[in-house]
Length: 194
Image (cartoon, rainbow, N blue to C red; front, side):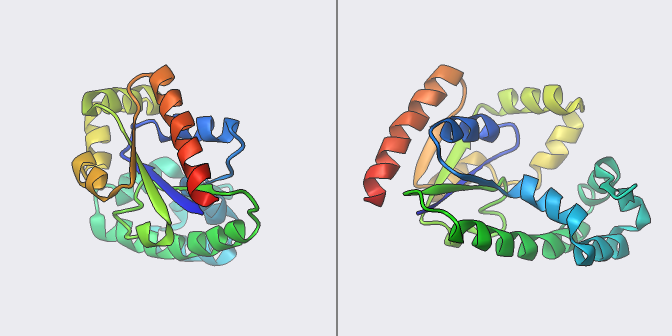
């Protein structure tokens, strides 16, 4: 079973993923795999340079600050970048899925619903947290100001919309309570996959 896992920026998806990984659940993290593809695929590199310029890379590595500044203020540019990277990620996900022997595995994508990729999943989990908490987490994690976090949030759906489309919701306000929710959900998913 392929289980989608999504949530807004700063909701604590990485924390939830780590709990599932502790339980031995394989996890495909779209953002990490996308970054690998963006530096390893000559075709993707060429297309990104054509779209954003040579400055998109420094010594073969992604110039993440430059790319972020370009795409988060220009929705059309962000869509073009996604149209280069996302098809490659889907192919990579298919390869990953073909290798799995576990009852279920997770496909984590921050913009699962926004990209209409929920159809790839048997079930979807949404991770949520208080908006102010999420903003503070991202400010602390990425060393950015509030305006930068809010600019990123504009490209994601509100939690209320995601929750309506989800099969399961994990509230990540408190680590201990979050872990308990993951354990309970893990048992539920194992039972569903039998």
